[in-house]
Image (cartoon, rainbow, N blue to C red; front, side):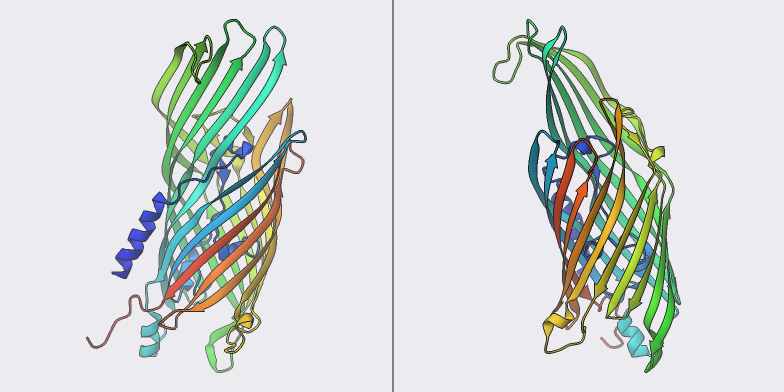
Length: 448
């Protein structure tokens, strides 16, 4: 019953993951603005996910982490974001927010049975599923120019939609080494509409083009984690208390499918109630199958961990976006290979304190520098832009009726995107995640 309920909740969330309204001008390029795949726990210390594993938290970034789970874990998160866009001559502030992720993971061996049987296996297995936004498209940009022989020309660029990712994760661990694989399905729809109005022409006329692109396809990535144990508990020589985790992730390029509908209209005459007197359809092309090539990627990270006390890590990611192709919109922008760096720390004053709750709170901080793959041309100049920011986070433990510790995690990200680009974005984003744990799944009862 627990499994059925969790699966129902996971799929029901698809209705809640409708893309939030936003006005991000750079989301018109590629598949939209990318959405980070880490959860509130990792967001609080710089997005450290490649080398992260925890008995009671999930890390979708590296599937190998599922093999370290010691309880069934249900993760759900929500976010709110405020962005301020500044072009030098105009500025605008936008609020957006939505459900950020929903995921479940569980060990395939019950830790309760291991304790009762007094026999610990060298092999551990984990599995999970997650539904997350993958990209978000949302913009409404208007420009106005005066051109020779044409007069007043007004342009409106609008876009909406986005893509989602459903991920099935599997992992296996032997002693201190774990390997995992994420199998993901990307799906969604993006709509793009451009309108040009020649206001000074007689009669007034406009050109409108619209593209609707439906996207779906299989993607995957693999992950590896290994713990180099530095110290064991003096009371249990099999229980590590201090270690270094090295994590690796990799994926090849992926070809996914798209179906494109395109329409081009020319309207003439007087504008009345939002409609022109006459319109001609110059192009109508529907159901055209196209291929989208997503880039290969690689990640490496190291974390130093003192059990239940301290976690410090650094992480590097690389993505080969120069190979990105979108046959449905082949000339929307150029792309570059990019790197990302992040670092973070998590500290718990005293996880076992029974009379001071504040000492059990997990405190997190971090920072990141991420290159954006999109290269935007304006007035003959190519602009490359980067994302830089700082993070803070807290993890609040809560004890549920069966004494299994769960958590409420909060993260704050403050950053700036495109400091040297035509449109600069300054933002802050708050993510709140709920982590519910239950270690009784797959428990084999001896007596019924």
